[in-house]
Length: 141
Image (cartoon, rainbow, N blue to C red; front, side):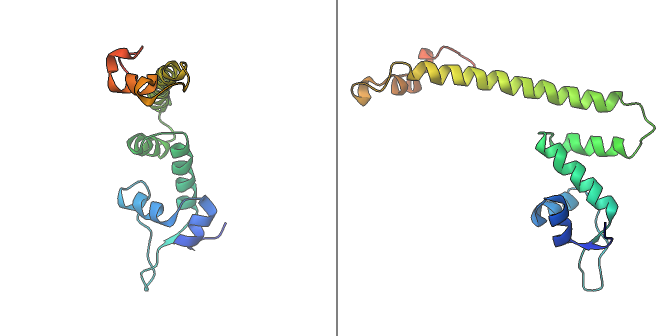
């Protein structure tokens, strides 16, 4: 792997867009890159590995603050894994909550559309339910 990659090459190698790389630097997820005399950023292997870690964590839905914590822990490889596991378990619980909410939403929209698209808009079940939350089968969606 080449050292001293310009930001465009880093972007191509990691699949992360240039503005996102700059953003990650700005918020401290990616350390500020050394710059050339002409003010171009240059990145090494550590930046490639770190950016791939960040990208993969984002693809799995981890929030920026959780990624920040995971990166800090990854920088301390001799620490116990329990804290990392806790972060992942908390994320899993969030995913399960989203799935439950989406399942309820799906059931409600399905229930709204079961009557079909017959008659006039004024008699349309979808319009009626959207206008009156009391007609919903799930009060908390």
